[in-house]
Image (cartoon, rainbow, N blue to C red):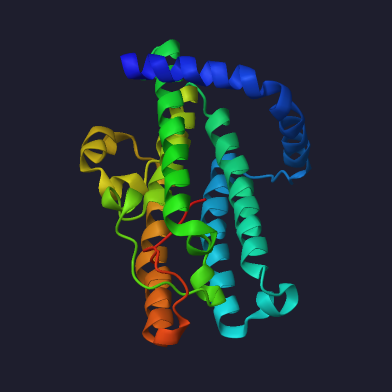
Length: 260
């Protein structure tokens, strides 16, 4: 627990230092969240639909762009960067509803003392964010946000950085962030967010297999379908048709990507 205690201290110090600057941003985010629609259905169902729709969103829009170049025609060469912002916003909307489901279910599955849950959550959230940023560094914005579908083809698959540890590190990183949030609130619905990480962390699977409710199954199956039936074949089609002259970067192409 020493590492977790140290990270908790660093987090508290960083939060105190950044609070004067992040306060206005947090206020804007709260107003934006308040503007999102509420639905007359159980929030866990809304969260599950949000998970599926986000994955469907980036798969469908990527294939539309690849086939029609519609976003590039409208926005020009910076289209992929606008698209990256769009996907981040889409992920934030998903996270809004998932976190609502976790908060509504707070205290439903208490495994840790409150202080320990806080420390573990800080560690998981911090590591998950680090893993996502590491993935972004390895892939770049174009590699991480469907740049392949915009014609920004890479020379070879990325095998370094976080890809030495995980097949789909951004999926794992985002899942760990959500798991950390679930542990903070001791929520059985939130614990169910552990999904893509199970593909790379068999030991975690053995420990938590007994607490996998509906969101886990939906999230896991959504990723599984996306990676193996949609994203994977789409990438193979793109790169099978790639002329050698079209390669624009030596840094490499990612394997199946994100849960931003």
